[in-house]
Length: 124
Length: 108
Image (cartoon, rainbow over all chains, first blue to last red; front, side, top):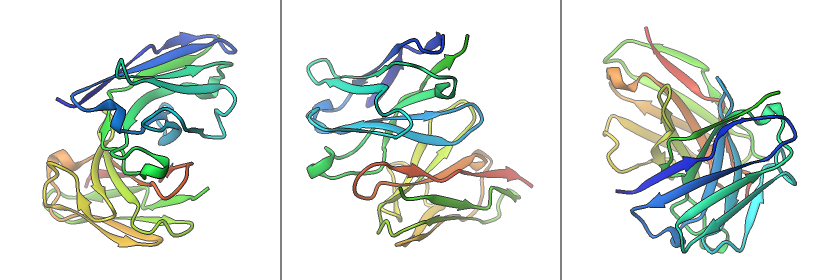
């Protein structure tokens, strides 16, 4: 079945790095733009980053620009989020989510498939 | 950045009653508006996209309406499994995409 499974979360000290992964299955991964969305404890949803279906285009929320990098490997059906210079305010559950369209010139859609999320805690 | 504002923050409804949730965009998002349901400890689930189209497997008691800047999610007869937090989300044009702050639907 169509599925997204995140991994890589954990507890990390401020200023350190962490790399999240999202394994996709059950669909043609290379056809879809992919997003990362996060949710701080007890708070709402915040869009973090997007990458086009072919990996050629990407965008970030201002809150993470210059610190986070989104990437994908279509040969391995894997999405990644490299998080550097982590701050306490980055503490959240991180979800990967599928866009039904390819993104950019391919168009955008609602996020139709979500992973279960992985928790990132930034604390000394 | 387009700001999405949901109201009310909390809605107390009895089972079997109708619930009406509102979402307002700070500028037009056309019909590029989605609604998600989130239960505690779970990922969001897509309910409505294109402002009014139900996602696969979503019961007919969920309906969406609106376009431009004003949108509504209606749950016609609340079931026990519908008590949750609901978010609206625009996916209009370029990033950044934004979500509303959520409406919690709780048992009255």
